[in-house]
Structure formats: C-alpha cells, structure tokens
Image (cartoon, rainbow, N blue to C red; front, side):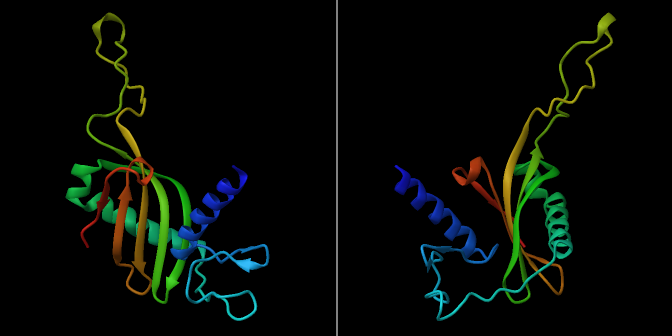
Length: 167
C-alpha cells in the first residue's frame, strides 16, 4: 500500500513538473522527472526561466479578464467570481508564462438565501454561495504581449468535462 501511494505521489509530481511549475526533485539518488532533458543527477539538469510572483499575478489577472469577457465561458461556466488558490506558476518555455489556479464560477441567480423576511417583505439578502462551482484553470500567457495563448478550465477535479477558451 505504501509503495502504491509513493508511486501515485511521484506520478502526480511528474505531471506538475512536466508542466514546468517547479524544479525537479530527487528520490533515492536519481531524478524522478519524466523528461528527455533530465537523465541523471550528475550529467544534466532541467533549465527553466524564473518568473516572479508579480509577473505570475499579472498573468493570472489577464486570464481572469479573458474568462470574464468571453461570452461562451460565461454561458458554460458562469461568471468568474474570485480566484481561490494559486496552485503554481512557472515558465516552461522562453517567453511563455504558465499558471494554474482554482477559481469560483457562479451560474445564474444571486446565490441568495430563500429565508423569508418577517411581515411579507420578501427574501433576505444573505449570500449563501448557491450555484457556485470551483474549477481548476490552467493557462499560458505570452510574456512579452500579455496575450492569453491557451486556457482550460477543468470541472470536477479534472475527471469531468473541460472548457477550452478560444483564443
């Protein structure tokens, strides 16, 4: 069971590393990254451009603006309300910033409580977050122009349907 769990963790880390979000890790003296550029610890290493949090935040802001502006995204996913967690960022290729984050989308309605107010005054304005879906956004932004190159939103933790933004 422990070996199976270690294999699953290493496989997930390899997926993240293949996307270029962090540097490779070493496990028992050898590299665990699946990449043709990393062979052994002593012969070569994976070279990635470093980007700052400020650059990553501006890339996330560009992706959020593109998702909010796109009509198809608003119809299929709902209005992007907020960015919940920043999962990772990096520069897998020169001139390209890759970001991954969780965002809340709300489709239709105001997410208000249906608790009636006294004396027949209608319903309360208490926000309950109804109709909110959290999706994982994976996007690439051009470092020089700030243009979104590709963007995918994964629903149901990636096991369900994915929305690909047309750019």
